[in-house]
Length: 590
Image (cartoon, rainbow, N blue to C red):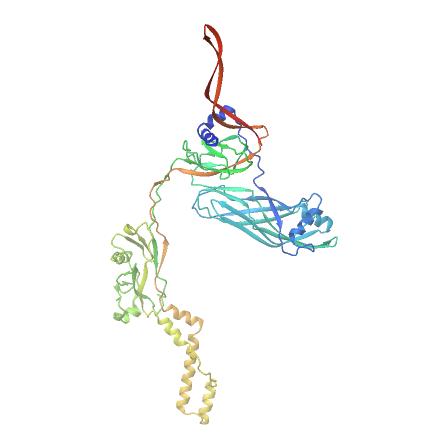
């Protein structure tokens, strides 16, 4: 009953109560945001020294080091270019984290003063940063080996960690050292009969050193992180609106939008009112994280105009000025499976060449010239397709041609127009046939190899004919064979292959130069809200020895004396009655 009553009082009247008692809002003293400690532990099971594993060896070094302490703690200065703000869903951003690790005295002093080492090697070091909250990522880098000069003061190891972070939701991205950080410090020295090989440690840190606010532009700006000191069993308030919470881009914060979204799971009671957050601290010291949100006015998102799909149709250059006059004859265009009638690409004296290969004559194949079709011809052919239709495409240019899909096909992503049924003065597969004919046939698998007979020369053929070893017909066949070999040898040279390739016009090409996009209509964002956390550091109350207890109602008997007249005389008479009274109990603080 007492806690329910107190909670109700906190939720309804905290603003007035705080003003009445003059509560002072305290701000905790927090270390610099770029300096954190890495707390490291030696691993078990390795052969760190003659004493045993790294855990045992680290304990020895700590004991022998004057003022070295009992653990291995690195002081780390971290600087980062991670943005202060990001928009959810806008894609990943790149962030760099520069670390400067100072080696602790518990390692440096024994190594330098007792082991007489001037340097140590750090091997297989992994430095890692974790990002949590509005994004989940772990960035790390591995350093195979680094020589550390122990004569420095202080001894510092520097390393950069880089990576990409993709904010998927609103909130805050919190950066901390990751527990995946580890390293091996190689010593290789002997001290007091103890052989020390190397220390392998794993490290981590719980303190955040930077944050990125992930919010839609126009959402309230909230200082992060937010911490508030509170004494046990007291109420603390923190003004937010206009202080830690400010408008973004001039978008006003909605009145009364500050809301508590989740109580601290481990205790205490939080409420909001008058632009401030309040917390009834529990009796147990500790950190209590409560979740809040605050909203700004809705914003109008202007329309984003759509973009038409634009494509380019081009015909590769052909050797039109040569005597042989290689040239294209016709082509068809295809869109979403529908194909146009053939479009003529050649003419002779103003007369278009036939677009049917069976109707091509000598004039069409050898005398006709490449004639680029008019843009209107290509447009009309495309508009005739049922997949396009009249008014839904525009073609401009004279080669290359620009094809723009408009109308019903405009402002949307569309597939590419395809070139099909390309016809040229020579068949499309002619080049492959010619080159294939010039190449000697390869023997079939498993065919036994035979030694080729010696190649005859003109001189040897003449000598054999003169001596009667061969007939005149054999001599003629030999000379023709030599002539054929000479022709093929010349035809397969690079220069000849290039010339042959030029005789076969390449098929026209289509490329998409602009991807189409649909129009995004004007919309309203709705309330633009920012979620945030306040961490309440609850510490023991040094001033109060008593705490407020419960208000209880109980029945008591109250008695009094009254004068009454009896038998002609006044006498005192005791009169008692039961009454209900309220009392507030107090208890000694434990």
